[in-house]
Image (cartoon, rainbow, N blue to C red; front, side, top):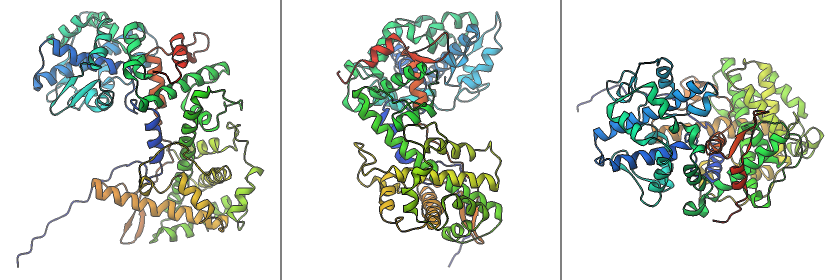
Length: 551
């Protein structure tokens, strides 16, 4: 019998995301609440520029999808970013308003910085997929292929794919394309693409294509306003959550500005969770947006659960790695950890030996009022403490882990104290969804009323560290290894026992808030106060806030 021997290469080790599968419900929810806007669709101008580009090529006779078409497209993509970067330089104001999140800006910003009178830029030096001086972007169709194609197809603006070709749709895509065409010098843009060369003077003449200029093109502003706020041709009941969420952000921006507070993600999370402003005042959100706010509150509640469980996981892995021990099961590690001085100190805060149920009932003794979420003893602030303390900016230590563990336990007790029987409200999930993501608000409520009811606080922590920590991470990592052939283990089995590969921070999900705010700024629904520098609804934004749910 012939026997052959070969080395088997181990799967590549990657960073991975959501090591406990606890963030997935949060991502599912915010995907429902902001359809058509993703974590990588940062600029509203691309929603019109890419359809215009395909439409313009079609008018000029470039309809065959081949290498020439792709290279022409990539030169145009480069030119768009050069225009934005150049406008940022000559405007001498905030760079982000012009070129933030434009495709290839990290590379092309340096190019624009060196431009002087009489100089020029050869677009193919940066657009060529092979042989470029410094390639601006790897994806075949640049930013369209990497970021925007999915949502533009979802919105029926474009059709096709990178392998067979992209087309604009006649009913919607052409309307969007024609809206931008009226406010730019399209002939000059295309001539620069054809010549494969552009000068600083030409870039200045093309400033109308800078993302900051969208709001000055009234036709384009109107069309994209209808798109993002789901009006007229773009009306779709499944897209209405986007309108309501954008209206909620506009409402919140106005109130935060009145209270001299910033419109940012932490304030957004706190306000949507509690329905109160940072100072404790109630958020007088319109009745038509109350249901939307409740769904976002479910997201925020699941986010708090996520950060707290991640905090416990971080603490136990960090301590285990520092110890140099090699144990063989998650339960062994958890039981070892709760005997360590740092864990004992954290448990002592709650009264070691007391029942978990009693600690839930008496959480009012230390827990801030629900609406006063800026209080340090509110679960919102405690979760922020966990996230910041586990980041790479903080030095690891026993004292730090005690603080992280204490704050994480307080968040879990707060969520238990404020538990609701229907945590996801009207949100709908596919059948069997939570079988893949067992750490969720429903399972939290189930264990609260059954599994954890008779445990003391020490046994509760042991259970969390074991079942919702190491054991579930191993399941998640094995599932990713099987499905993606990539190793995402943060702690893995070895001949000597379980060993830590790296200790992940407890991180928030990114609920598309930054992208939504950027869209509102780009289309002119938010304006900056010249006195305070804070953002508030413009007259256009105020009109959008009055839409209700009508088509």
